[in-house]
Image 1 (cartoon, helix red, strand yellow):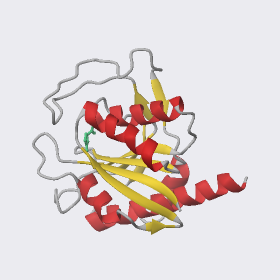
Image 2: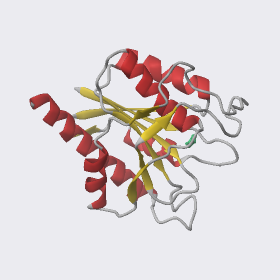
Image 3: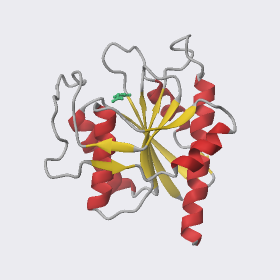
Image 4: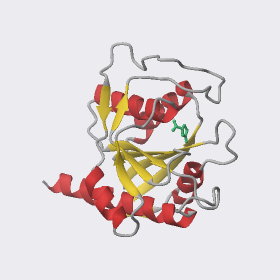
Length: 205
Ligand code: PCA
């Protein structure tokens, strides 16, 4: 069966929980439209997250990669369009601080997501309006993971749809927010359904 790698992140900085960890854990081993979910919770580490992802790509031979992370200041699901070649931000969970560093010295300025973003957006919107295509994944570990993943897939000439989705804190974790854990679980399920349909369509073309 075709496999999708679904990653989330551990808590970081002063956050007690990371909703991306909770969502990917709840979806582990589910089969969605013939796509088997392999969930992995990554450390919020510039170095280790990328290393684990490269190992997963090699060992799991995925048909798609969907990475989730928390954007604590946002209230909607952000389908990230682009990852840029910059690391900058607060210290990661290894205590490492990156300031205006390139991820790959000789790498391109940016990579675009290869997920069918508009199809996913339309699918999720049928259930919930809190979703949009975002033009910045920031410059912290999430952006770096997206960049490293797309860079590695390019290096291996592996054409599998891959990209990053930022999710907000659930209502359970921040009462002011509109989306509950159940809402986010449903939205990511719809996203995986759309992705599976898009993979099937590209195989039969
Ligand atoms: N969000 C952070 C890193 C881990 C996470 O869940 C980010 O947006 O970079």
